[in-house]
Image (cartoon, rainbow, N blue to C red; front, side, top):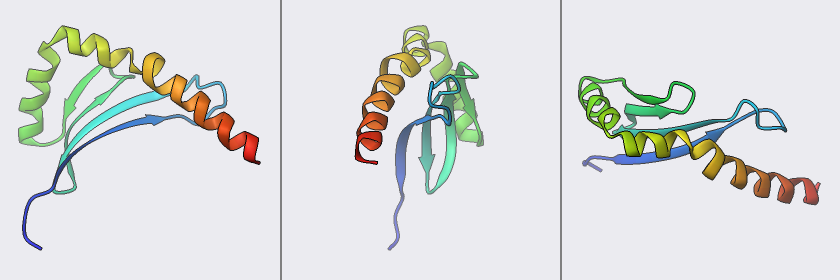
Length: 92
């Protein structure tokens, strides 16, 4: 099928049980190519395509959004990981 495929993906990535290595990623992709991504470890958006670099420059200017994204590890990732991890451990 012809057409375009654009999507945004938010991920919480970690490998330790205490979540000390947890990273929040927010990626914008077009036709399976990541254009721009926020990484909580880096603390800003990084562009991976010509268009993505432009997006990153604009996104990084909005300090209110940047502060909110930087806090996502503690406000979104960690609480959800704790709930999901305990549900899995209780079933094991």
